[in-house]
Image (cartoon, rainbow, N blue to C red; front, side):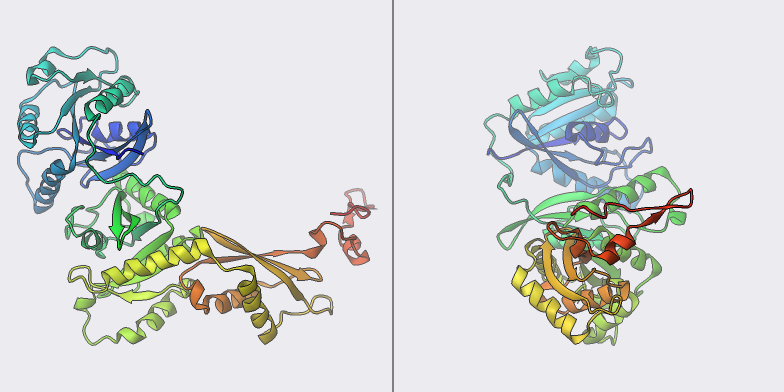
Length: 471
């Protein structure tokens, strides 16, 4: 397949770049809000148009002056991204008309020397290009409505025409195997974006001491040791009572969505503060989603007198529901162990999808069974007949027992701990499901089982429920 064109959506704030970005992708990936300066990072999304892969980038709006250090960092990141595009889609506001800032932006785009297509947005009622839009002296000027989708298809055709013959840009991985997705998650100001930039070896996302700097989930394709990896930077998660505006609500939703679509999550914890209630809440969300997990304790360079050898024990004591997760002390600022953390996350992803073969799985469970048999059921011992692995995420192990598979929750927890003690399952969340032999085909129900299916009717009698049929 041809390499993906890289299209950068540029323009001043609040002209509808993020709305157009979501429209061309066909899903809500970028946070959209009337608040000026909602988008801060370079957000990437891939789509296919007429058989050609296209990578769109949404960015912050151009500003003439930056009032704060955060705004300066956003503008630096924006201008750095101009060099990475193949084509610019310059989005203007058709309701406001062409303003002086639009002309200043066009001057900067001309200096880069890449093709430019002008998209006059918010033309909801009429599909006519305003006369002042032709003042840029460009032939490719189109009227669109990103909100309603008008003219967006024609815009995609024009982008494809201008991009024909350009083969620059990273390859589109269109093979049978999708690259593993690793999400960097955690609460605010624990160093997620710093770790993201350190792994990419470039300042891809804006880093600031201001809480809530990252608002969108930023996906980037990374070549790590010769293998493609999808790296996802997310907004900081926190309790609902700490969320005060609509933008934060959407940011939280994007972060939770990223957990649901990743293979393994790198849970970042601030080593200078230790495990907090929010960290416990986030770890619980990862476990409930059935995703692999690697716990990284960041800012280790600020921790004095700590013993890294005792770190896993201390973290697992406060996060007992993810005691199967490996724990690594890192420093995103100095680069300590960041490659090790990503390597561990990739190994967990491989274990999650590869799983265990039937012989090894049954051998591990039989050993656990013999060391500590389950409680008897109606005076009869419960035996394990078979165990089957269903690859995840989430990874499910189906247990077939005899006689009737009645295993208590504490015993299932015991089996999980024994399985997680196996090196090949470190960091892999496991869900155990018990399948009863009486539900297997070709077996008659016993008298006890038929009695079990006798139900009481509202009128005081009883009736048999499928007591003569086979399952």
